[in-house]
Image: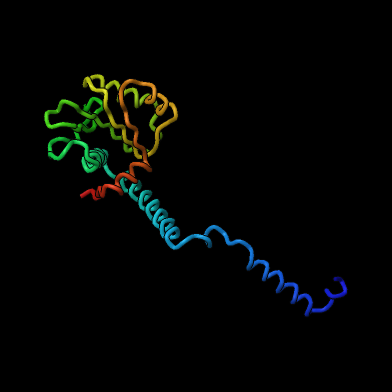
Length: 188
């Protein structure tokens, strides 16, 4: 082999053999994907980028706009039935920890209260406890707490151990719900 290695023709032959072996090697995952899988991956990448862009826009909006947006999202998801007055944003300075209200039925027998935090920090257990207290003040056990960032582990653990039914929706799932339900983010 050493003797043959001194001839350029042999080296060329060996390199060609190496190239032929490479061509016979299994292809990478991307090369093995079907056109449908490539389209699906591209769609998910675009949707993920859109979600990040939506969150960025929402974080730049006013707190009152965010509260109205959250109520509109929940109505588009089917909460509040079909009548217009079933859902409303109520957030104000002295809102007692409630930013929105959705009547599940026309008589208002069952009500869901909403807290919306357009924050750049993680929502912790104390904020959830304040919201649960606000629910108790309304004699309710149903609430939705929505934030633009995320919830702490302590907040998630707390919600899993209490009697009240609190749904937590944070940044990425919020953006996905907005996309899925065609909720506009225009502030005017």
